[in-house]
Image (tube, rainbow, N blue to C red; front, side, top):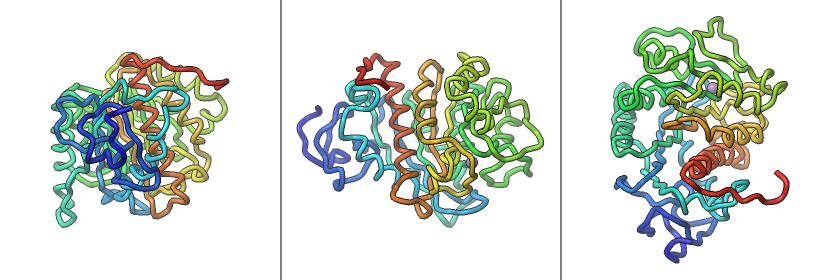
Length: 324
Ligand SMILES: [Mn+2]
């Protein structure tokens, strides 16, 4: 436990470790009840919202994603993590940084603002975990990570390749990874796209695991391919929630049938511990189209489980509880 502060740890807690009692149904919201702070000297992981949906090709609303994911995360902050059997905040210091400020009247300034926001966070030697926002946000975030880490491998969960051709400077959530590739930010030869089920006449060199392949071969085979292709390279993890089937994640801008289950997604996330991932995001949650928080909860759990995987890497010991 933390410091015996009952409730509202989002602003009352004075430390980034541990957790205290909260009402799951009330209290000031932050991601997993983490303390809101912009003092990042002590933080291992920093969660931030990027409330941007100006680049979506279909249903808008992902600007409300961070708020919905924070709300859905409250139930995950209550007990020791499953199936890990520990409190990740005994091992890792995780802060909620709040959201990137964007001026709605200056859409053209938004990518640079997001990039500067990412620069500011990763300058502190902390891992940035971003809650989107439509998928375009990953492009300025990748640019910031490239400046710090050099060329990146992408581990990309999505229904869409997001590598369709485009003219320079357009903001489009379906073309930014081709742009990142052409600018040398990401290396397609060491990148994997998982759950794809929309056609693109070009692979651009990415290893693509289509959703039917994932259903047929299973998640352990997905991890094997990531091991082969990404290996020990410096990688960035981006999870478009529309990788999940619309029955598991209806609350998204461009849903496509035939996707992964939430269980498959979580099994995949829990299998990423061996990779050198330096940043991650969960994007495209559009709460207006959601039903009973199901999409926001899936996104919150993906982010939560990724934190737990990092806690294992930092020394947290998994406790086995029953048969998994
Ligand atoms: Mn997508």
